[in-house]
Length: 287
Image (cartoon, rainbow, N blue to C red):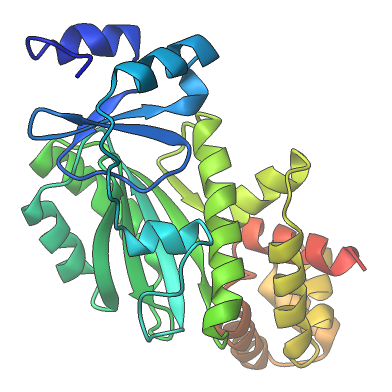
């Protein structure tokens, strides 16, 4: 082993992106080396070619067997590890592994949770049943101050879209694309504590990142909603004003609310939220 005398503190000064975990993490972009009773992880992007070659040379020759079905799924290497297909993912980024009590709190707060699983020591995946109507973004925003106060943990939350009505194979492409964009956003060192799917996709589109799969999927969902494009355009033209939008569409405000609710359930986008509305409008302009 290249680390002697348990000197991880010294080693971490040389390689600040390194971390130790009790489990080996499945990621082709990370070097995994047995260390004491756990595993040392070194992101390859933070290493020079000479450093990487030296570490691999000095590391034990035994290959580490890694089994993390959810991470493998998000990286496009495995099938969906669950039978439920109406899904919403929330990614929680944190300085160190979450305690069992904190994971239990997340399960208690989200009545529609399916599971809470660790992807990395610094990233946890919260899998929700998207068919249950809960405003995940508002719940997370209210929850973060409590978590920091009671558990002393500062979290960043990335709220995935609610995907309903897709097959396992379709979700493979959709959720892996969503995760890739979230990872790029996280690596850009964004400061917001709670980031929604719409905010991240707008950022990715502005940065000319690869978002074709997600854009096309959203466009299909919008077009499945009766007069969905008309609704998006009217809301955009009236800057989200419900009274004026109802007047433009010649419908009662209650009818407008009904249409907005149907649009949200079908697409995961809440047109009463400016970021969601802006994303939906950009999507229908792309034809």
